Each structure stands twice: as C-alpha cells, then as structure tokens.
Length: 431
Image (cartoon, rainbow, N blue to C red; front, side, top):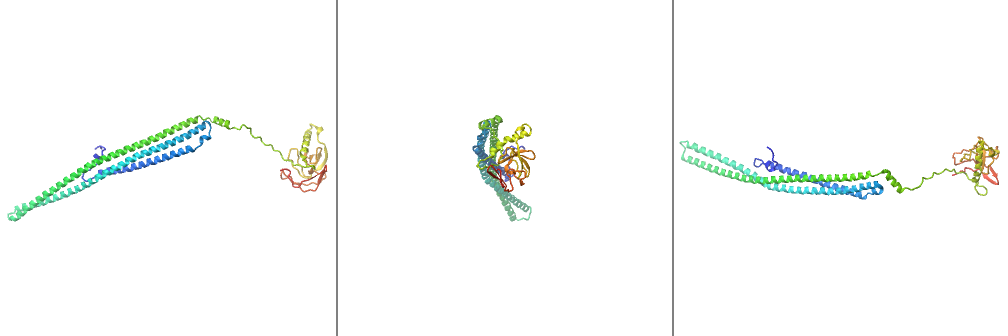
C-alpha cells in the first residue's frame, strides 16, 4: 500500500480508543520544534558573529596607516587593501543583519507552529477522554446485556422443565412464567442500555474523528510551512555567503590588478629621487701618530721645526744609501752609546736598544739626534736617550706599550745652548 503523504489518511487506528497515530504526529511536531529552535539559535549566533567580525574589520581599516607609508603603485595597492577590507567589513555587517532577519522569520513561524500544536492538543484531549469513557460504557453495557441474556435463558429452561413434569403445581408454573417475563424485561432493558452506550460511543468517536482530521491537517500544514520556511532561510543564507564570496573575489581581482602594475625598480627609483641627499660618501680618517713635544727655554715648541728641517736630510740620506746622490749624505760627527731603549712611532724614527753604540750624524738638534744604528738604519731618536760619548752609563728599559715609554730614574742631565733637558721619569710620550 503506497503512502499518500497526508497525516489524516495515514495515522488512524482501527481500534477505538487507540490514539498511537496521533501521538506519533504530535511527537514529530515537538521534535521539529526543537530542531527549528536550534536552527534559529545557530542563525542568530552566526549573524552576531558576522556582525562583530565586520565591525572589527571596519575598525582595523579605519585605524590603519598603511597607504601613508608607501609610494607609487605600491601605495595604491595597499590603499586597495584597506578599501577592500573596509568593504568586506561592511558586507559582513550587512550579511549579519540579513541572517538575523532570516532567523527572526523562522522564529516567528516557530511561535505560530507552537500555538497551532497547542490548540490542536487542547481540542483533541477532551475528545480522546470522551471516546475512552464511551468505550468503557459500551463494554459495561455489553457485559450487562450478556448477563441478562444468561438469566433469561436460565428462566426459560426452568419454565420448560416445569411444563414437562406432570406433577408440577400451578403455583410453580406461575413463578416460572413470572421469572421468564422478568428476564425478558431485563434483557430488553440491558439491550437498550447497550444500544444507547454504543450510540453515545459513536457520537464521541465521530467527534474525535472530526477533530482529529482537523488536527492532522493543521499539523501537516504547520510541518510543511516549517520545512518551507527553513528551506527558504537556508537558501537565503547560501545567497548571502555567495554574495560575500563574489565581493571578496572582486576585491581580490582589484588588488591583483593593482599589484601587477607595481614595478619594483621604478618604485625604488621614485623613492630615491624624492628622498636622496645628493651627497658623497664620508671621507675616511687618516691616522696621524701623536709625537712627544719638547719645550725650549723660551717656551716655544721646537719639535715641528726640528722634524721639518731634518726630514729632507733623512730622505736624502736614504737616497744616498742607494748611491743615487753621494754628495748630500749626512756627515758623521761622533760615536755615542744608547742610554735607554726606544721604539719608533713614525717612519722618520729608528729603534734603539739600551747600550747600543750608534753614530751621531750631522743634522741633530738639542731635542732630537739623527743617528745611524749599528744595523745601518738612519733616523731620529730623542737626544737625551744617548750619551755624549761612547763610554756613557747605560740603563736597560722595557717598553711594554708603544705609546708609553717608561725609564729608570737617572740624575744625568745634558745641557745644550743654555737649556737644560732632563730625562723624563715614567713619562707618557703621547696620549
């Protein structure tokens, strides 16, 4: 047997008082109400989430300063990103509002379905009770009628048995006839009650069937409307999501088109042309060693004059060592002995070992002596670091710092041109 799909045709029960078909329909509507309630809650939460997400996007787009930090086409592309995020946020806010509206529509239908189910239940409940009571009365009247019929049969049996006996008195026969008559009246009365109870039951059953048919139709209409509204709401949700996706694709295409116009080299050239300093790189510093300063009796520095006057002579002497200009080589004056160790600090100075015998050359001054070492090197050393003769007392020192010379205290002094120069004790030659 194929189903017609109508509640009023498919959920009857042949036995009077059996309402299991209606209970199934009622249970279905209750479960559908729960499902619809969950659907409404889901749509509301989704709408609120999209609305909040869209508002956050609008806030981010409003507070960002990305386009201000870029130039050229890249700045335009970043601007497209901000505009796209802002439009996306607006779309999300609108989508959230639309989804909440769809949830409101479904919720309104849910309220109507609940009211319809409640009305049907209130209408059918007394009808069901009437049918149940009428069925009970029919059963009672039927049992009573059957009992009266049994009594009538017994009375008739007694009457017949008395009529068959020859010695039965007239009195006994009259009693049997009276009992038979009373039994017949009781049967008629019981049958009448049974007939009335059946009639009452049929009336109650007919009222129930009429109400149930109306309730079945109402429930079916409510369920069909629920399914229809739910489908429309979900279809609207799909359209909203599709519209969001289309808009996002448009923003993406706009951004990609803008990014394709970005030329990295041109962007850098434009920025450089706008912000360049138009200066040359810094000039590296030249290292100039600090040399000791000596002061003569008049308070003026003599180091610069001495070194400048002797520089030419040292250069000429170096050339003479190669045999290029023999007539201009320095003239040896005397032998001397080194009193202290000395480490050179420039190219015009030579190293000196304590006790080493050197030759003092022409071109010396009171502060600096031009010497030729035992190794044949020609250069300047402090004049007070050598003795006046080759037999002078020597003191060996160790120079642990190229910029500091430490000497052993010595009381010997050398006087030249009425100016007295004392060998310094623990003196730094330069800072």
